[in-house]
Image 1 (spheres, helix red, strand yellow):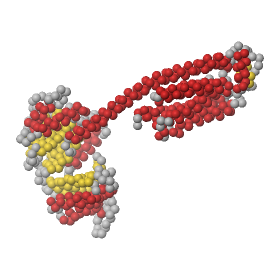
Image 2 (cartoon, rainbow, N blue to C red):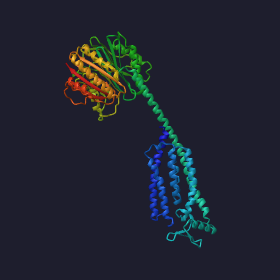
Image 3 (cartoon, rainbow, N blue to C red):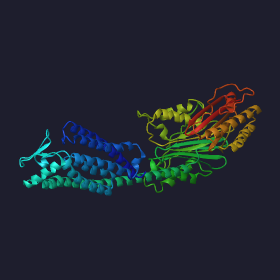
Image 4 (cartoon, one colour):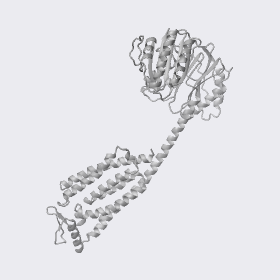
Length: 615
């Protein structure tokens, strides 16, 4: 919605509340007439109360629209102003001495619309109606002795004046005759009325209009500046979103499964864009290089320096070069044009997929964590010197050997330096505790444990730094796994089942188990497509792994449908002929019978089913 439209809707809501307040004050005035605090002729007192009741009706009528969408309609402001003008007109006739203040209020409130034409229109209408109302009020409204001179006898409703021998009834005709006789006696009240009564109020209303007009113009300029600033902020936000998209496109996939190794990465920037980086690539068929880094600062400058570092890594990572040589080349590249004296910490490693040997070099980054379930520990390495500031890098090559099943986890200090509301740091010890607390069949499960521990520690405290994790797990010949994604369509179910069968045949699973997991897969995939996605399409990711040494099979099924737990069925034994085809039926009974472990969670907008079996 346009900012002016929003402002007009807000002004309409404010006007309605002001009208409600005016109705309350007018009700107090009516109480004054009922108790003779204000006086009009007894003959018309009841009529006065009825007329003021009509004014109250016009004031409260717009209240019925305060919660409707009519507030934002262009015509609605005229609807409110019309009711206000009618109410002020009535009051000004009945109480001519004070009713003119209603016109001043009307003009002042119009300034909220930031529309000079409406201000001029209301001023003109108010001026004309005020003069008409004052004229009618002289003869039909509350008697004003200061204006008309003389006194009114409230008991007899007769007007007395020492200049005149006669008495005059307090009626419109009586008041007119009284004023004519006063003029003949030398007291021309018509002149006083036209100057002091009319002229004074016209001057007051005119000054109010001029003041409000100037304030209106100034406020409109402020609103225009605010809108312009808001548009600039929105434009900057859109540009940051584009920059975030470009940055994410620069980074490699967060998951990669290739022969003998598995890579999972995760990045969470503190702002729209961040200075953390990770990257990986095959140098040749046997060597795999991976990198993590943390640029000084945050926001756009850090993001640009981060992309410059990644570009340098991809340019210089070549077969035959050691990690220290590559980091030295990166350092020379990012120093060029670095007038802002930014720097980056980096950890670079090259994995030999044949034997698990890792050659690595550290440039001022956090030491990585290596190991396997229950035995993760920090790697002792040379700290090195950060890149981008000095021509000499002071980095050196070191090496370790990963056994099959072990992994190396790289992270940025956004994790270890995360703080809770008390200002305590998360630290390396808590990170290691999260990783060693239980066994993890997949790297995704390992990341979940870290994130749960971190979320529980910070307890909603504001994230102050970018967070990046990348784990490279070396399987060697111990763990075989495959992962594929499919379109969530019923006609693709045979392809999904073929994927399960092929993996089973590859590892010589028992024929009975092979048939059972195909049936389970058929049921689970069908439920996701029909009940999860509602046949509207999507994606299904299937990851199968088999630990050859531990003789354990794991299937992980992931989809992006709304939360949908297929495992919420009663656990009972499957019997021959006991077939229940509704959702949560046959396939889910089988899975609970034949799998050792099965679990469900909804996280990061994904349904995740974990099925495990030991042979």
